[in-house]
Length: 164
Image (cartoon, rainbow, N blue to C red; front, side, top):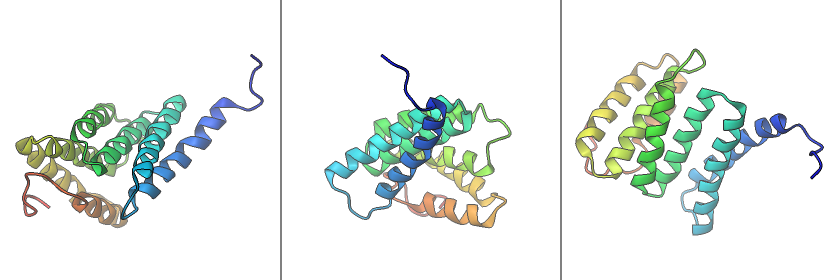
């Protein structure tokens, strides 16, 4: 097989954010078809895969978060939790490239995973921590977006007033 006539590293950097955007376009839809649900998941996984080749811990953390978010949107608690735990593993390896909101989002998604799997005590604790981290975000716009994302969707087993 002949070598491709393109730069593989550049291709990975090209496709990763575009697939991330495609996933978000589908996540943001009010109603999705079954086919769109599949495309959303594939785009999340593909984006994370391409970021893997860029070898950047932050992008892996955010990629795992996006996969977990897609599973949360589908109500798949087991897979949401699995990828939220991976996201938190990357968060624990944080370097200077991480932003304050990366920590808030990691806690938010782990809380969602626990809520979706019926582990409400852990979910409530982590959601409260996510809210605390969100309230402390330095940038007003980041805080607004995070708190909006924290309020998104269902929190099975948790009352709305529990720390949101």
